[in-house]
Length: 197
Ligand code: GDP
Image (tube, rainbow, N blue to C red):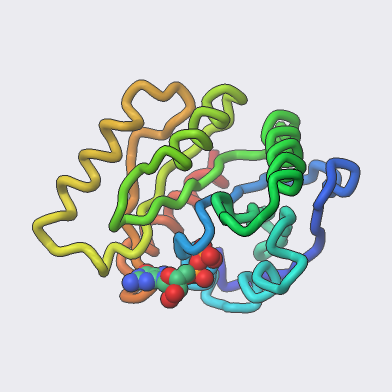
């Protein structure tokens, strides 16, 4: 699936710049520094996508990539970056909410959570928004390599418990590491399953 082409085709900073709804979209969200770029690189096997999204000026917008002519990968701007001024945060929040609410072709949002920390209040705020908008989402833990073996099970169970009463949450939590590639195949399989639906 990810062996095909991957092309940046649209960016949206405001609602009127969203590309038309064509084909399935799968989005990736997470706190700044959670490891989103690294995981997208690992997932797609190329670093051009995240490089585009890390370009100054492109980090605060929705970046759209067409993958293997099969689906669109949407890289959502990282949240919780303290240096962003309040007005920008508000504009960002408006765009994100409007995108999430109005996107019938959005199959799932993968919400990346730092495996070392688990769900923080800034993350649960985002999950609240997704539940309210009834957008299907799945939590993916990042930086799994930084966890001790004995911590893994408890971290996953803890996050699963935090999702139990959330109506739009997919119950399975994935543990990944872009450093050692663990769990990346599972994430790829989850994407492939979405496209088969
Ligand atoms: P983004 O801001 O969410 O796009 O995060 P980046 O992919 O740029 O990564 C942020 C930081 O986390 C960088 O210092 C990465 O080296 C580090 N990082 C990313 N992925 C992993 C991982 O799988 N394991 C560990 N230990 N560190 C990671």
